[in-house]
Structure formats: C-alpha cells, structure tokens
Image (cartoon, rainbow, N blue to C red; front, side, top):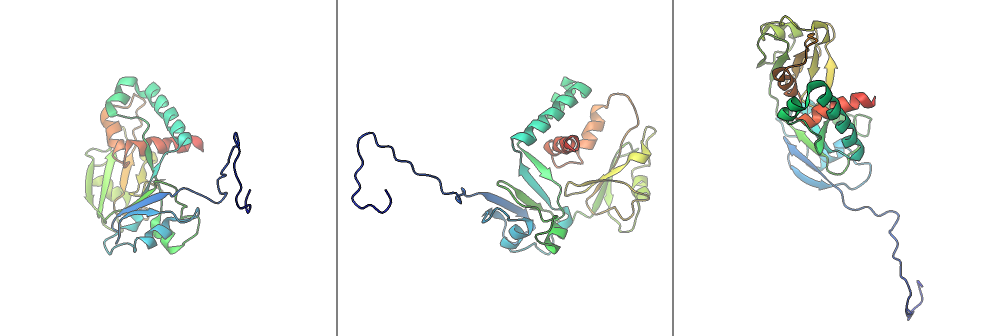
Amino acid sequence: IDGQPGFVLQPYDEVYVRRSPGYQAQQNVGIEGEILFSGTYALTSREERLSDLVNKAGGATNYAYLRGAKLTRIANADEKKRMANVVRLMRRQLGEAMVDSLGIDVEDTFTVGIDLEKALANPKSSVDLVLREGDVISIPKNTNTVTINGAVMVPNTVSYLKGKDVNYYLNQAGGYSDNAKKSKKFIVYMNGQVTKVKGNGKKQIESGCEIIVPSKSKKRTNMGEILGYATSFSSLGMMIASIANLIKK
C-alpha cells in the first residue's frame, strides 16, 4: 500500500509493521573507578570495544592501575547453565551444608579477565574485547601490595617490591605449611587472570596480585581453606565462572 494516497482499510484487514533489519534496541555499558568521566554509555555499534569505552569516558586518571582493570559481565543462559553444573559438582564433593554455608550459588554476573593496558595500546586487536550489553569496566588504583594465601604458615598481605621473586613473598607468610603442594602454586591477578608460577616467578609478580599455594592433602577441603581461596576472586560468581570455563575447554 506504500505510495497509494487515500488507501482505505476494509473490515478484517490485517496490518503488519515489520521490524527494520538494521534496528537494534539501545544497549548500555558502564565504566567506573579511575576514569575521568565514569558512568553509563550507550553502545553505538556491534563492534564497540574496551578501548572505545575508555576513550568515550575521557581516558584513565593519573592514578589508574590499568593492569588491574576488570570487566564484569552479565551471564547469559548458557553461562549460567555451565556455572550451575559446577555448583552441583561442588555440592557432591564438598557437601550440601558446606556449600550452603559459603553462599556459593549461580550469580547473575561474572568477571572476565582482561588486559586493559594492552587493549589501549593495541586497539581493535584480539586483546581489545568486544563489549556486550551490561558490561562494566572497573579501573582500580594501584594497591602496591601482594597477598600470599593457601597452604602457608600465616596468610599475609605485604608491600609489593619490584624484582622480588615468589620465595621472598612466601617467606613473608612464614613459608610453606606441611601439606603445601609446592609445585602447583599459582598467581591470581587483579584483573581476574590466573597463571601457574614458572621458575622463581620474579617476572610474574605484579602489584595487587595474590600468590596461592594449594594443599596436597587428599582429605576433604576444610571451610577455612575454601574461604582463603575464595578471597582470590572478586566474587564467588567469578570463582564458579572460572571453573566453568575450564570445564568448557
């Protein structure tokens, strides 16, 4: 009927207004912390990335610790399903009561490990992740500390000293405990990324990171140890999502 002036509808006619193929409802993302103009911004394209949002918000402040920035993402149905599978696995291994007491459950959000420093230096590259609706970038200040946790004598948080290796920081926590699995220690960074310690780990230690020494005990993990490990993650949702991603691979 387009282009026909004076067209009159008749009884029982049905009118269909089709959706434009290029239409997309407005989607919003957020950025907070050490950024000039924190807040909520609309995605202007399907290819908008980390660097685009930082530039929109005026760039990071002089106090920003870009390597510690993290991305919080709303879990979709598939991601929630994987996390639910992990929770069920944890309930079988740890017991219903312990999992409930820790408040472990599928959350609506999880943290994506990013390297914002590299993303800004290499826009549109593979490290410059494409954003999706509900994403929030958080840029922290530099804490200038290192935390040592897990199977050590006294879990501790100490000042970060550039050039010091893993053994230096382990000594600040009293050294290994008797049940330490020394060869399996790993590092969790502020941005959510995790890596196994290689050699003396000197080049892997960064401000804000956490060194974790697993236990070699085959007994059921106790609540204190689980809580200690949980502090390595920004939320229990992140812990579950991290395990889910390993299962996915």
